[in-house]
Amino acid sequence: MERSSNSIQETRAAVASRKVRTEDLVAAALERIRAQDGEIGAFVTLTEERALKRARALDEAAAHGKELPPLTGAICSVKDAILVEGARCTASSRMLENYVAPYQATAVDRLEAAGGIVIGKTNMDEFGMGTSTENSAFGPTRNPRDPSRVAGGSSGGAAASVAADMCDAALGADTGGSIRLPASFCGVVGVKPTYGSVSRSGLIALASSLDQIGPLARNIADAEAVFAAICGRDSFDSTSTEYEHRSKDVSLRGLRVGIPEEYAGEGLDPAVGRVVQSMLERMKDAGATLVSVSLPNTAFGLAAYYMINTSEVSSNLARYDGIRYGASSREGESIRERYERTRGELFGPEVKRRVMLGAYALSAGYADEHYRRAQRIRTLLKEDFEKAFASADIIAGPVSPVLPFLLGEKIDDPLAMYLVDTYTVPVNLVGLPALSMPAGQAETLPVGLHLIAPPMGEPLLFGTGRAVESLRDTA
Amino acid sequence: MRMETGQIQHIARLVRLSLTEQEIDRFRDDLSRILESFSVMRRADIAEALPLTHPASLVNVFRSDEPGALLCAGGEQKLRAMFPDQENRFLRVQTILQRYGEE
Image (cartoon, rainbow over all chains, first blue to last red; front, side, top):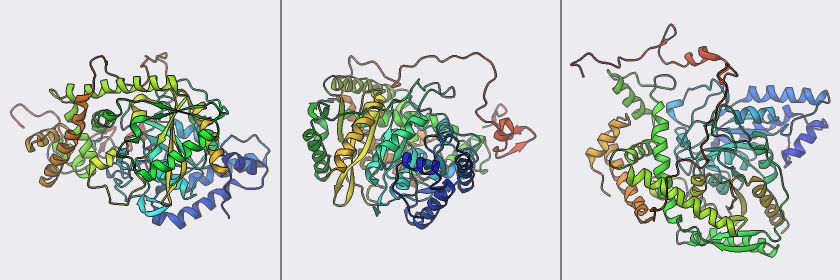
């Protein structure tokens, strides 16, 4: 069955009018996955039976003329850090290689209640640690646009599954850019919502003050539809907030777009800079006002982020001891040996690196210099953004300082890998909503435009995204 | 900022990781480079800044202490099914407390 490039809204209409059956959509998606995933490696587990069962239920409802939920027929993948009940959930780690989720994430509940069909779990950097999806225990995910290159990370499988047309939408998770960066590298839309707007219940925790679940999709409207379905307070996540999303049209005319001075530094690949600049110029021609803003503490953002990330990581990963669930080493005579061997054998190198760095950053004698200093820089960054949003409605720039790089290019240099997150991490530290959307290409490789809005600014964020998308697509 | 092998070994014990000799060397070098790069934080003017531990303002969330929806519908049984080593309803582990005088 030919893949239509329908939007989620169009697909739902087609199912409702019985032009197409959801079951056939699932079968077609599975075919496309089987044809391509051997090379791309987007999926860790397929949930075929679950998908077909749900599809049949929706087709049954359509046959009886019942009102269909908003995401009916949307084939969705779920990052393997997000629990889907009854399905294996590995976080791309050997530590959870055979762990089957006994319950599921609220975001998945809501996605399914809205008619979304979960077709499989996607590959990621182990426990969310990485920028390329090369840190997976099950092999890397390749970029569908150029399979010699990385898909980006840590939600590489999610982004690739949408870019390769294996699904309509994906749920990913973003702690320091893990949705936005792979979205940029693969040429799709990726959204990290305001901290607290989407429940983290059922998301394997990486850094609890930074993590957020968010959607990836082919276009802004689809991403927005998924966000609207999954957002809102959840009694199982006490950091979740009251949130009812209202879609809003935004005109570029008179829109003040803030361009941070500090982002045009020497780390930015000129090829990336040119594509982003070109899009910004087009926005200006359409009536937007480009305003220079300053985020003076940008230089400290990456270091502060990694200090906080690794500190929270070292705490959150202490639960993986092989005792209550997950794989474990039976070697060792004492309980301490069992812990040490289990974790030593089953965690990958980046996980070990971060767990150790975090423990060091928190340890007595060093916590003030590292962890607490980072927390104070976090306040400075929050103030930087507050000042910037006084003179700009929305902030724009590149998502990544580099083009999608070759597999293996940065894997031996952790610091070079961390630098790829330079523009994305401040957003997580401050809890702002942000998205990546395709802005063009450099040397045939996708380049994403980063849009950042004030807290709870999703209507403005999505509205601006739609306006830029219209502009881009009427060349 | 140069980390010593002894420091890496100490941290590895704290976080319950057994490392090979090569891993100890590699992580010592990695952490040294990373901390050196992150020492840029010393230049930040944090004099007036309070620590921000969380982007959202933390508010106590209360509800009445009554049984409600279960997160795990399968209940206790489902969770126990994942124990690597089970005896009756109990999870079997190695001895945690040693007799006085034993390591």
